Length: 331
Image (cartoon, rainbow, N blue to C red):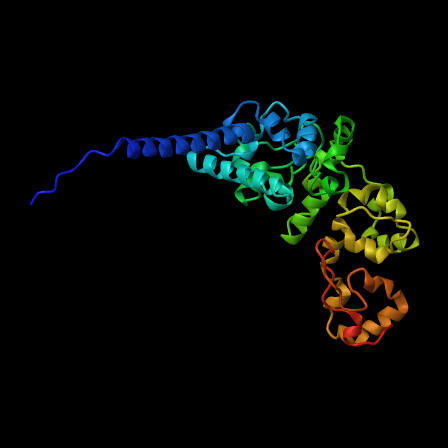
């Protein structure tokens, strides 16, 4: 017997309409929330980023940068639908972590890819008009080196990397602080980064490789300076730091640090010291090294070696794996 279908009662229809209306309101509120909080869905993107209290330092430093005419998404979001969705997801996560009491700058990273930079800049650039540096950008790009490896400070002065967002609470940031943090030394590429990268990859390390003009002291031009400079540094290495401060991986107090520790902290020094001296290449060095220590002093050894096994930390430098107390028992 065929079953006769009956029309839903007015009460059922009303219930369905109410459910649909509630779902519609929930979806509308969700979309409007994203519209308000997520800058790339609204207008004035940098202003929307500034609505997040934790982003105040980034917003103020961006205003002082030479990229202030560009909105956040121009650098932090690549083209394409998938990248748009990924970008939106990162921003929503930042909002979630911020609302939950976590620091979004610690939880989420918004890296800038080279493709974003190349929308405006040319990879064929070979020199910097603002300085004497000669940098073949196309060679670096072919090696897969991202633009931000050298230009990390261009928009925000590396404030997160330098720990400034932790040292100074967001509420204490103002335009004066931002101007100070966007000083030339924080926004331009650091020589220590160049030398560290070149040293690890055994790329040319001479000054002329990157600089078209060089001011070299007369003492450095004398014959045998490479062998004599250690003795000069042993007497007083503070004058060395006047020029070589730019290749330090972190700020040091030259009045209290030892010469051996200074060498390990300076990219220019330790990348050169990675090459074994001629005395180490001669046969039977292990049998004669004690006499060399007596005649030349142990400080010569400590430029590359430690007395005890080193506890390597990030950016500690390439301290040699051979250490004195591996065979001896010095205090």
